[in-house]
Length: 264
Figure 1 (spheres, one colour):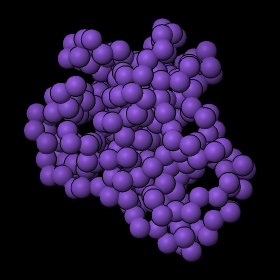
Figure 2 (cartoon, rainbow, N blue to C red):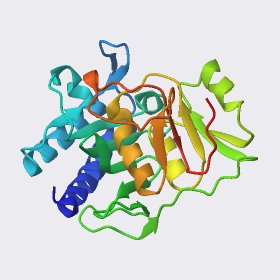
Figure 3 (cartoon, helix red, strand yellow):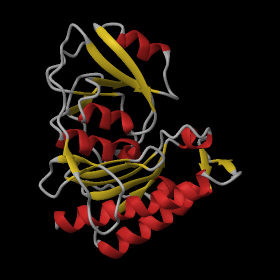
Figure 4 (tube, rainbow, N blue to C red):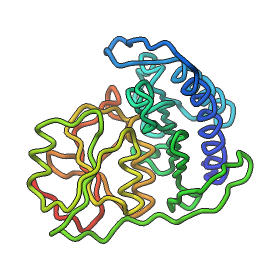
């Protein structure tokens, strides 16, 4: 894979998809439908999916492509592929809370090695460079030329006073019970894959997820986290987290800054 070209294409497509999404987001009204799994979908999801899918297929035709909005067509087992969530955090989008993202990632041998997470309503753009290091670009965002870049690096955590981020729409008692096993200085909530980026940027130390997610929900944020020195493991046994699983469904997981003393 030509990583320079990959990062350039993923970044541009994420920004273009963000423009499409914001057109719908700022409209007076938009239709919300339910998919077969009862999750919401809007015209913004579908427009962003079409744009990104077409762009990736044109730029990298031999590489398998997995996207949330075409999930029912993905039946083959793959370990190296592109994976997309064109609008992660649709609930936040529908409620106009701003915590939604465009996620595009490249998985190689089961590991997300490059990714981009763009939060258009918040004006935050995170991605991995060609060499694998993660950065946050500060706007305004020119689609053809990156602006100023801020290197991302996870925190050096203090286990006596951890900063924890958790889901805004999917918090439950099991998650709260798990977090209570740590010495927590502060808690914050965020939607979509922004939670990974907060850990990557050193704005949080720990993000546990004890709920259902799919690989397109996590791959891009996971790539950004890894490129900032962070880690992501399975919740049950703390084994390495992998991609290309049957059905692209994730187990529970923990994303964290090395130095956090994980508990079981």
